[in-house]
Image 1: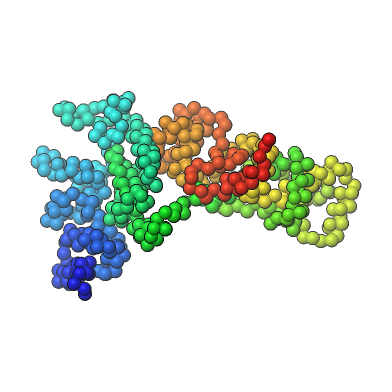
Image 2 (image 1 turned 45 degrees about the horizontal axis):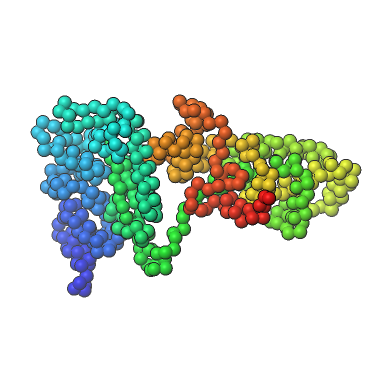
Length: 490
């Protein structure tokens, strides 16, 4: 062991103690914390002492306690279950609990009762409000001495508090922070699992919200892995942007592609001249579908399959296809037109049938063949949909599958702002995705006291398509950006 290897010395000291007599958990925390400051990770510490990562994390969590509580735990004045619950409490809650312990006329909850005390109550102190108290339109109650006051309407408090949180988030972003991470209510921020990182090197702001309404902003932190990558990358990697999380998940992108495809090809059926020109373009350039093959319309999962089966555009397309099959004399009313196996006798039979049809009927057949061989999720869909001014609202409305696939809280909040306004969106910014989606549904249905929104299209479904974030990862918008210069209107 090198003389200056402080971390190894700490490990050796603790291992020696463990061999003779297990130190108490507070002593272990003191040593583990020093090891973390020396650069050891949680897995490093766990491997050294032959314990699990979870055990190490639980010991490090003692760092979230006030010193007085840690010392009481060391003296066995507080049991293990109580101290575990206290690690989830804010500093203000810990101080309140210590005050109860010090008052002989008060009862300090412990064990399960402590958990109820921390998370089950709705008595929200005015001290935790981020907003000005005079902006709160509801009733405020005070104790007999007037020293403590509380919000009588918890729902109204959370609306105002969420608006203030949204404003705080916007301020941080305007000040140049790369990202503001808003944790779910009750989710705790563990500094020992992160590394202090300044704003200019990509540090983030983490905002925590307790069940009692307390808000804490932790400025300049990165998870250990991200911080290590930033250090190892040097100057060049510090300036390179981290690949952002795609705006759409795979199934949601598939959902958008298939519904847009269905609407565009249904609309194209009324434009045979356009279809003819597409046929010529396909014949000259070729495509991934022209052998000739039909678009398979593969769905990512059963949810998307069921949604497409009930799609209005698919029903309209099916009706026109049955009419064309009748023109061709096909005995299968529910069959397809394009995508045969290349049998020469079959080709001659179709050719003979087409010779007997007028030009208008042949154009109907040609238009439907073009529609069946139009690739979903392609740049052609964007070019054609914008050229034809396709109104997605006439073919599609948000359904259960759409809301089931919508799982991004930031985007759900932006959609809520579209249907309910920024005030409603800011008032629910910290709510779970499920809650915000339910509010959007209420606006679309005009239920639960919400004013009905008759026509709403997400930006993803419009022509041209638009993104909700600057993260990228929305293939549809990228494809339109590539082909848009080719279709500039005079």
